[in-house]
Length: 428
Image (tube, rainbow, N blue to C red):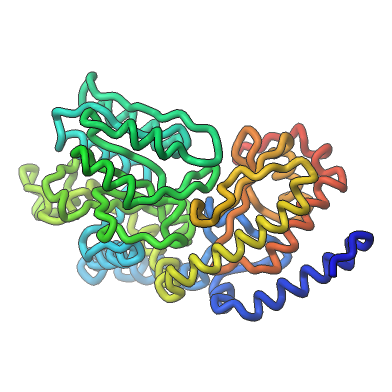
């Protein structure tokens, strides 16, 4: 029974309940596979940058000292050429792709630009890229650049939407015979809204348009089956729920049904005979044609341990725990944070969201800074008024859910907002 007159007692009761949940958690053992130097630090920002797997730390030393330091250029023939393809296939297995349909290449934005331009060039009679305002801002910038690169007649049409729920009906009505490409983030970086890949893609296909999905906030935590849902194109980063490390290369998926698409930024590494050094060499026959220059080998190789952990845990198990973590946080927050000026800025129905929850508050930036600097709790802030709490099931615990709510309350009641209201960090 909750004792409204004894907050400290309630806190202990909540922590006891959380311990029971953690004891029953079938993914609990995966937490020990990550570097966690400070167990008192609550990290709820894996939706921006995942934790460091222990095997990645060990692998980095081996790559630098042995593969590079000792074997030098011999590593290309011994493993590097094969490794980049092999790791791409592992990422592909997480998103339901066939072998060879996913390649690791460039940054997320560059991959998006390549995919968008190739789609536009394949359908020259159409001139519209359709997206929504809550798509990732960098994606919209890249889509505009892609449209401009193809012709002056091409344009990006942005469906306006500032609410929690996505304007599904408005989007569907806008998909007509003028649209060459629909491009969306599967999970919105702000609200956490999660699109139905199959439904949107089918509507686009019905009028002869292609769809390009950004999976950055969903890969590794939301079940994805690109082939089953007949997805044309997809890109995504590897440093969030795949724990590939800061600046890790992104991936690009080109369905085998889009075998005629051409890489608009051709380069030696995507050619049929890279080491023939022939400027007239034709592109690779498979999706390696979307590679351009020399891959960033060290960061590419460091992606593998995080992907292996996701594969070992199983995406359905990860999703189940993600839902359990977010549902518990939402339940607690509605009772204990909403009276303190917060409001829910994510879909309440778990089926409609990814693995993070957003809450709006007039003092969001100050709350985020107070949590980091006074409460050893890392969430993140998205201007002007959102605090995001991300749940990475491989290392987030139910105990951290309970304690993070308490620490957020302490920020409000303890005057933390006032102490940090005028501090604006470079990276919120």
